Length: 421
Ligand code: CMC
Image (cartoon, rainbow, N blue to C red; front, side, top):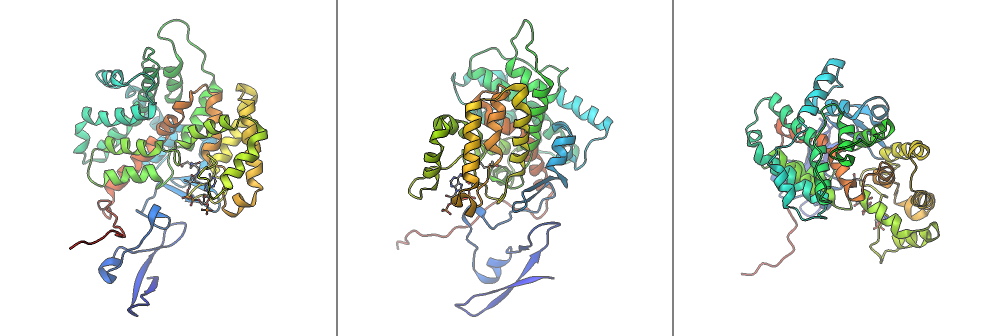
């Protein structure tokens, strides 16, 4: 058994702590018995050096810029498999056979409808409300329609619960958006695939000729969903697990994850990147914004740059950058914003401030430019992230339920207040 020795220089006592080996990546010091043995806690705001669970779903090597789902590289999956196949992979641990795919795809299509009375919920939101708060509310409300998911015992029940939510996310998202504009809702079309259906529900008129949805648009959005499908223990997934650890309903745990994702330091960055590019306005202003990002007295951050885990190019950003190049000719992109983004990237990647801190473009730097080309409105950018990420959240929730080592998430603190007797 490999161990590390911790010596308390005040008391002179030494303690052996076990080292845990992962299948790949850094070894971990098992501190679960630390308090019992030593009376000491670890202190780690933001969990920069703390693993909260064992997981066999997603692997990230931040130094190498590597991301894998169930062992497969993200590059391989994005090139060779659809988002629905990736959902099957994450949920079950294996890519589907042709017959499994047919069945899984048909089940998701069939489950895409939402309870009719939930439409009243959307009517309760004010016009112009942000689709992310509508989404968090709608997913929490789904728990009220499916209390039976509190009592799940069999793995088949977990799968039904998961597939039900994954299938409904595009419908909830499109309803959120259409209601925010006060335009008629469009119901799912069973003849369309998951990704095409979402674009259809976003764009269609209730009657009359249908606007063409091009295969290249469906393929691009499908890739975006795949690249967002899971990302191990990020802030929103950790939120889902923390809520899940209390025994709450899985859909309210996912709703909490949606709320965590909305923040601009996390998934909300895709919306914030475009707002920032518009604000910068011209390549002539890029240097001034870079100077602000470097100024320690200014809390301004270059959105779409930096990552807690990646200390190299985010592999998802690399794939999206290539996708953007492919779409440029076919769909057209906002050239002014693209030029500003390209200048930011080239200035930042050669600037010592960014090099020393290993700040590279992350997934959100390019996704917004692609979403604009797909005619997705800006308030929907983070909602696109939630559609893709739901499979990851729910797979992590299920894994946690099956994990006998998991306990209620309950960190300690360093108290700095007074004691008044
Ligand atoms: N612009 C300028 N400086 C930055 C940036 C940035 N985008 N990101 C980090 N830094 C600096 C930071 O000020 C700090 O400098 P110093 O050492 O002088 O104090 C240093 O780099 C380390 O940063 P940190 O804040 O300690 O890093 P973190 O791991 O706590 O934060 C982050 C990671 C993603 C929250 C942060 O990089 C950030 O706010 N980036 C912009 C928002 C963004 O693009 N978020 C999307 C993340 S990817 C999608 C997802 O999975 O959520």
